[in-house]
Image (cartoon, rainbow, N blue to C red; front, side):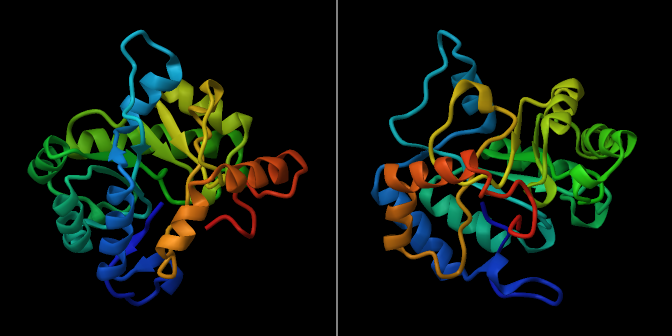
Length: 237
């Protein structure tokens, strides 16, 4: 999980902005370990257990939340250096952050998927049923209307979700939804509660190595079972 690459701009949390050279080093570390990027659709197919649903030995899904295409050039250039794809999650009410329709088509053709980060980036679990539904359904409609093509994937704002949000995502026609649950293994029932690894300016190769291990995954699975992990509370994003 990334937010921005480059230098922090006004109003941005420095921990959400990874310097370009650090981003390059992080991707280089993952590429050196043999990871290959996959699309959210490929992951959904694999978790669905279809007969032709195969992933590479070391699949990697790179995501960008709060994406603003006025400042994605550096990130896209570095992704291109490694031949990596990614998915950018747009806040539907912030049309000024969108690429043009033509640019959106180019991005998709180059392996950069476009998804929803809901309508207004509100914490969905704190909204009424109708408000949460609008955030999930309307954001998909707006993104598809503005950019063409399907919007099949969502990232929960602040990582906040519950069973209501999962069902709304299914009803709206999404195929996956990303949370901020921490872990590096997934089961078939987790399509709408996918885990992520938050990449920060201080995420060095040693930390990446730890994130990829079984021990780190088991640690956070145990914390979640004991109710010690957040689904978008104070430690969300």
